[in-house]
View (cartoon, protein in one colour):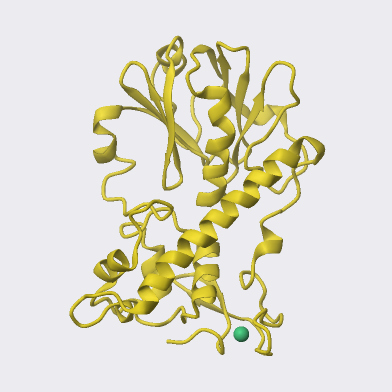
Length: 295
Ligand SMILES: [Zn+2]
């Protein structure tokens, strides 16, 4: 499943093809993805120009010149393929671990004024697209009640302390709570807690003093969360440049993990000597080192 960095990589890959361009035509090849596509979807997009392409949590948002926003979510297996005249096809943020692309799963094709073609392919069809008035976007059903953006400047030790103060929930659960921080997924939470030396079962409220001020570890964690996400975006970007020569099945974020999915392997901290452990929290695997990560 694509996590936030992969979605940001997709956004950066789509931007050159879509920003400032008009939809010359749109092919909608089925009535629904995870949800029905909006009524008259292709017709409402045709002729519209993309004025901005942004991301909020794991949603991509194209602002259109008529005040609508095209909201896109990749679900489990959604991906975009960009084909521009005179260049090989690229698949921005190719995270999907399957060789090749089955054309039968090409569900929506955007034909842009430049002659470029952007195809949405989704094997499992958990992704979706919607058209929402841009003015009401933040209060729309997709975004109402959504927490802060972890890759933005908003995330700080002060804010973590404010969000988590008094909470007895485990730190990992609080970090995954989408109402507090939006789009931070299991992999990157495990990685960030490891690098920050914080135990996943520590109380979330322990990041704050009794007065609700940030402890040093809150500042450290905020900084590390951004670092982990930014590194993953950068890794996606480098793969994007290499992609024309690859088959798309690289699993390329994997080798960068220090703790995630490494149960029973030696901790990477020099001199630690302990093995990475796994525990299940809220039905999801947590990987951690009990020596390096303290409560
Ligand atoms: Zn260790």
